[in-house]
Image (tube, rainbow, N blue to C red; front, side, top):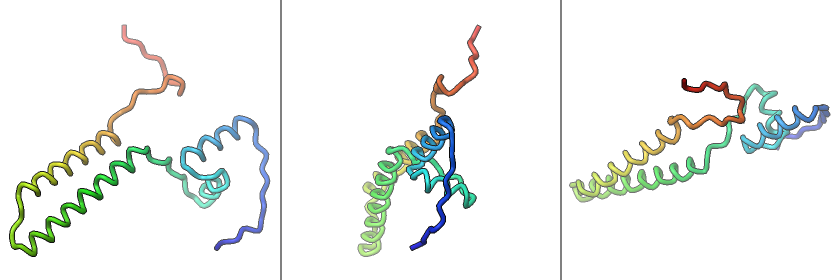
Length: 120
């Protein structure tokens, strides 16, 4: 285990503290770990949404089903096309859901200082 024997104390104002707290919370790291990451040249990524973990479990389950089908096809010498097509379609559907969740634009939050452009 890595030992840290040097303590550094830094004074920040309320705004800086709020930014640090918010940034660390978004990543799931403690303030100290967040700062250490920055010092070491890494900008921590925000934690993915809970949907990400649900989608990943779904992909793992589909992959497991496809592996089982492949193993069965290898032993029996043929593939049940209906079941394979069903799993392949399920995979395509989940991939589309992931793409939508990751790439689709989200509505801007007005409180984030957006410029106001109103249609005539």
